[in-house]
Amino acid sequence: MWETLADRLVYGLLGLDAAARTAQSLQFFVHEILKIGFLLVVVTHLMGLVNALLPVERVREAIASGRLRGAEHLAASTFGAVTPFCSCSSIPLFIGFLQGGIPLGVTFSFLITSPLVNEVALAIFLGSFGWKVTIAYAASGIVLGTLLGAILGRFDLERYLESWVREAARRSTAPTSGGGAAVAWPDLLRRVSRDALGITRRVAPYVLAGVAVGAGVHGWVPAGAFDSWLGEGHPLAVPAAVLLAVPMYSGASGVIPITEALVAKGIPLGTALAFMMGVVGLSLPEALMLKKVMRTRLLAIFFASVAACIILVGYGFDLIF
Amino acid sequence: MHIKILGTGCPNCGLLEARTREALARTRIDAEVEKVEELADIVSYGVLGLPALVVDDEVVLSGRVPSSSELGRLLSDGL
Image (cartoon, rainbow over all chains, first blue to last red; front, side, top):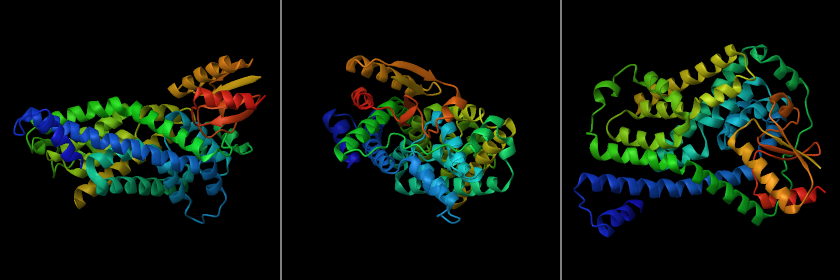
């Protein structure tokens, strides 16, 4: 549908020559923007709705209730995926979970998946790579959070929390509703829609820039250009990609469309996936925030193990696809 | 009325403060607005998301930034 629309606009309305590089790049740009823009609006609305109906306070209650019987890590990780992520909320969330009596390992499961699988990344993934890769991405993010939280929970890591955090966690506070009083449906929908459009507007410049670069790659970079240094069979391509990803946290929404264009030119999907997981999941502002509650040692353990798992996911996908 | 804006200085926290002041000016409610940026103080309110709005030591809102008209209604209800 978007392909035809983009064809009509670029080759029909503007009358550009379909064989020319500039026209092909422009067609790619228009096509991607239409598709990603539409998906962004839809996915942010859906996730906003899920979140309005299932606020994080209720999530904490469900996990802390003990009724999940061993599925706490999976539940925390899945809830992390559907909860919109903001690095400024990670600390209150972290301490709030501990205060609610949720073990550190389960809290980690939430904390790992929450930035990794978020509504903006999912929408752009869906637009750029299609539903198969998007599901693979979301599923690996959730599995990664579940397993890693369970593993980290086996070690006695509480002692590496800052002492004021341990004290705060012991003082359990009365659960707050977070202003979640009953809201009429029309008001709720209006609120969800306003937030969703706000998110779309905020990431729009990054998406536009990313798709523009992607369009350039699409038109001008020859296929197989990266084979010699990032291609299949290069043993260190995946860790190098993850390392490269760490400083790029702020432009995650622009990085995905660029990576899509690079994959089309021959970069293996697993390497690309690991790179994007690194961009989205290993963020410096998040690390700086967490530094206030964790001792350096725990922070290092946390980030190193997330990075290691992302690298494993990358190798895994390179093997499969 | 004593209003506290809980937030660590992210853009959304500033937005909540601006809209709260806007709502106060429009509804002509007389209130003192204070920003709470110290993490230990913030977590003592037990909120799970930021920014959060505390009116007379009660959390009325957390984890989102409403429009200034919704804030106006929220603050008028609290009187």
